Every structure is written in structure tokens, then in C-alpha cells.
Length: 417
Image (cartoon, rainbow, N blue to C red; front, side, top):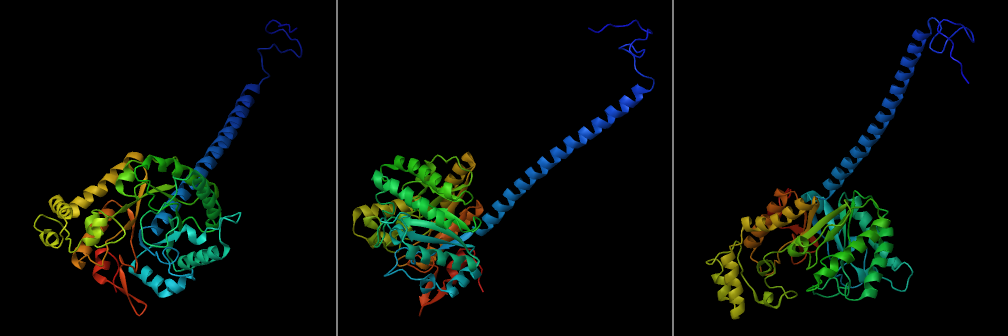
């Protein structure tokens, strides 16, 4: 029990509990002030460290985003090495030479899209589901491309595509067992691809999923697929896309996944009546089309109408003329994707657009490609043209040497010597 002594009465050294030694108040104040200063400095230092670390992380994110984006600005497709290859798989230089890669770089492309057929590397009897010899060829080829200064958009282009056709996703979504196997296959493949710098390798899990009349099946499969790949590739950017061959309607019906490191890809070939005139692998009517013009108008399509006999085809051509396809209409279509991306705060990517050159008159083809490219550039959408040297190509082959179509290169806004 503490007994309070009367003020002035000395007890226990002559101090009451409300008294201090002479001078103690000043010393105590100084001590308190010093402690407060030290504490404040410690807090400030702690906050500064957190802020600097946070700023550094943010800075690193911005730098990575900027660097990665700069590597995936303008691209070209190189399809016929690991997709629709003729005969046995060969080392990359047997199909695309060092000179080809140098030309691609010189023209101003920053990346190539590399289509791969699953059947070329799939080994169902192996635990890792990967053919070791084919995988070695593939990884070696990617290294060669990267060494040339070009980034790579890795594209799982089809399930099994040894001939023409357009059912790229095959049994995916139709066969539950295969769908699970496809995801398992991708996890093993992702583990192998993870060796490459995320700023230089972009991953596209499935090109042009079809799911015709069953489009609703694709988004949940894609979500599982992206999650499975993300486990093995935490830092690489992945591409998502819509069903219906990655066309705009498929993209616009898509709900983005909960992953900020995913870009949203679409392909642009509208109107198919123009871009696929003469093609034998698409809609049956396309193979009979000739001299379909661009831009379109009722007067412009008269020649093309006179060259066909089928009344339905004549009707399609008249409609095409009345729709008056031109640069403004193309921009309006692409703006639908832009609005969708802005709504969800995601990034767009367009790694296929082009026109079949075998039957499309060169001035019309150049005009369409120019207008698509201008619209994509206007809205800062990175793009890749289909393709380097095939029937949709930018170059012709002369005794194996790539000869650039300079007018088409100009339409693409590329560098010309």
C-alpha cells in the first residue's frame, strides 16, 4: 500500500509522488525529445525502404512491360516448318534460312509467329507426352530465331493438320478424355518452353478454336488451360482468344480471365468473300470467286458477278458491293474489339490478317492489307501478317531466295532499302 505524504513532508528521501528532483524536468524533456526524434527517424527510414522497394517493383513492372511490348509490335507468320511441313521435320535453317531471318529483321519486323502442329511433337506413350527428337529441333529453332534478334510468338496452331482444312481444334471440347490430355500435354510443354526469357517468348495455347454452335464450351477449357500453363510459366505473357476461329464475334463474347498477364488475340479476314477468293479449304463458294474488288461498291462488283453462274454467289457479291467495304468500314469493325478491350481494361493482339494472293488482284490486295494495318496501328494493336512466303505471302521465292513484294511491304509500313 502506498501512503501519500503531505506536500513538503519528506518521506522516502523527502519526495512526494508529485514532486521531481531539481532539474529532472528539463533532462526528462530532452530525453523524451531525443527518443521521439530517433523513433521518427526509424519510422521514416522504414517507410522509405518500403516506398523505394515498391517503386522499384513498379519500375521493374513498367520496364518489363515496355521491353516486352517493344518486342511484339510487328510480326510475320512462319507456318511451314512445324506446321503443314512436307515430309520429315528438319532443322529450322532447312526451311527458313539465316538470310530469311535477316530479311525479316531488316524489314522492321520485331517478332515471328511460329505455328506448331501438336501431332509433330506429341508422344502419347511417354510420361512427358513429348517426342524428344522433335522437341530438340523445335527448341533449337526457337534459339536460332531469338539469336537473330527476333522475338517469338509460340503458336500451338492445330491438333493434327497434315492436309488443308480449318478444324484446328479438332476433338478439343468434344472428347473429355482428350481435353484433359491436351491440358496435361501443355503443362509438360510449358515446362520446356519456360527456359526462354519471358520478354522474348509469347505463348499461344490454341490457334483458332472452332467450337461451332458450341462456343460456350471454349471459355472454361481456355481458363483451365491458361491456369495449367501459368503454373509452369509464372512470368510469360499468354494469349487468350475467342471461339469461332478467333474471329471478332468470338472475342466480343469472351469474359476475360483473372490474370493481368494475358493478352487477347483476334484474327481479321473480313470480308472472307474478298480475302479468301479462290480458296479451296474454306466455305464451298469461295473457290469459284475471281476478281472480287476492294474497296467494294455496287458498280465495282459487276465484273466479279459476271464471272460466276451460281445465283446465291451473285447475291453474296451484290451484298458485298452494297456494304461498301473500305478503310473506314474496316476501322469500324476493329473498333468493336477496341471498345471491348477498354471495357475490361485488357490488351489486344492481332496475329493473323491477310489475303490469298493466287486470285486476288495485287492492287486490291495491297489496299485491303494497308487499311487493316493502318487501323491496327491507329489503335496501337500489335499485329502479325499471315504469312512470309506462302499463298498469303509477303515474299516470292526465286531459286529459293526470298524476293520481297515491295509494294506490299510499303502497304505494311515496313522499311525498304
